[in-house]
Image 1: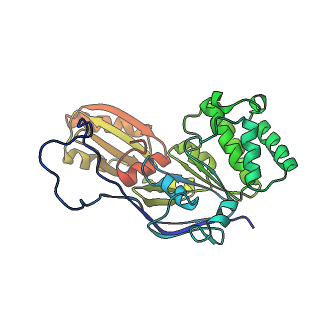
Image 2: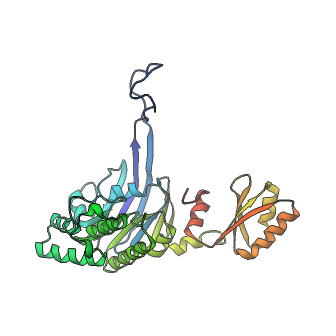
Image 3: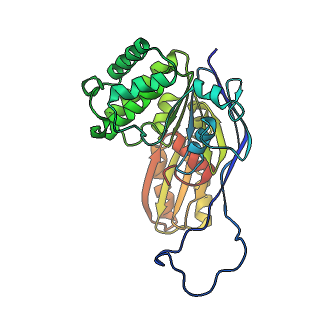
Length: 339
């Protein structure tokens, strides 16, 4: 049976020393340092994440940089030791059975980590050897993956001359070489051109159709919407929303978001916006802006403009977006997913 993924109250706290003061050149002048150990700052990367990812599911962790996505993947792939909680791949506790877990997983890191002294074909065949594949099976799988990832014409060249997109494709092919039950893709489409991104999505879907479990991290809403059966939106190391893309988008009040920019506005004016037909919620986002969640989009603009004109408020800009994961993140956190 294909393995699933479970985490229970997963926590990770990093301790790092204060940064060295810039410009001292390694020497310190002025007041002497206090004797004794200084307290080390704590950075909470994961703050009690619990997930149940079903066998054979494509699951996404969606969130901005620094949300805890890569740390979660690091724990599940035995690269980061958690501060607390538990993590399982199939029946195996990740930190109690590291060898067994490594045989079940394939990992594509956020940045390519290929050996530049090898050719693309050698990278694949050597990886297959690590997992005990026979020479004949290694050669067969390598040839098939090179063809599928459109790398056949560069198969016997050193990878140091590859483009970033080619390196990323080869990294994913390497992770699939031993046919892992669980595939981890950490920001797999970052920096890829649109054509390569679409090829990657097609390959991910194909791999999943064979029954494999896939955990993918991204801050690309389109990618999460296109690929994932379910997703968890995380921020500051916590899960803030969990469900199918459609379920999460439908949770946004009214669905539509109108981001309004005024010359200046008052709390009284925002209250008057709230009573417009179809408006579910109005939030001030600074002294000059407001986010308006509503059941309709474009048809509401004329009414907002008329209300602003009658109140002597200048309407400077309107941006309308339909139901989206971006809107959901904004509604929960008050900030854009890209900030």
